[in-house]
Amino acid sequence: MSRIAVRKTYKLYIGGKFPRSESGRTYEAEGQNVARASRKDARDAVRAARSAFPTWADATPYNRGQVLYRLAEMMETRATDLARACSGRREVERAVDRVVWYAGWADKLPQVLGGSNPVAGPYFNFTVPEPTGVVAVLAPEAPALDGLVSRIAPVIAGGNTAVVVTSETSPLAALELAEAIATSDLPGGVVNLLTGYRSELGPILAAHMDVNTIDVTGAGDETAELEILAADNVKRVVRAGSEQSPWEISAFLEMKTVWHPVGT
Image (cartoon, rainbow, N blue to C red; front, side, top):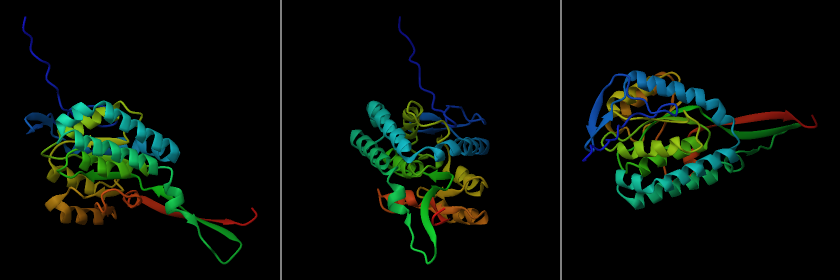
């Protein structure tokens, strides 16, 4: 007997789970019906990211590096599926290598970005990097996978959690990546992926009071509007600099200076 193939249902990725949009809406992208995230979905994603932040931020940098490396392993395992969802195997390899690269930097940031500062007095003075908090990311439209990974990896390597609006026209690579994330050691809520319309979701996240930073790299024509909304709640605005650099991580970090008396 012939059978009907089971078609894949493309859902959101929030809090380590794969829910449908609460609105029930979908839109067509890459020949598939993809969930169209709503305002409530965005709020749910921010809530999940905020809940996951304390545990992820308190993890040792070495442990975060291990977890990112495990994510790279899962991406390598799913390389064939990821390649079908993006431009091909070479893009997958670049994305995997990028995750490994940032995993290696996770436990080196305090030494490179922090330091002991000279002061005129009987005190020690140290500067140490700390994660900012919840980061909203508007991923570039292309490359669908490598562009997404290049913006997520520095965010989470520094101990932040992310709410990501994926490529609007090419979201399937992000949804395949979500399955690799779900089977890695990354705690639920550290990365949350929303598919849908950038013009609808971007302003919601830029205005959200519990989002600490917004990455507008993929915002396109909406950048100016998002910057205004972010300024209203004193939110940090970040856009991509160099393609791969520890300074990409530092954009999502706060520098804390600590004074301590000598001999105490």
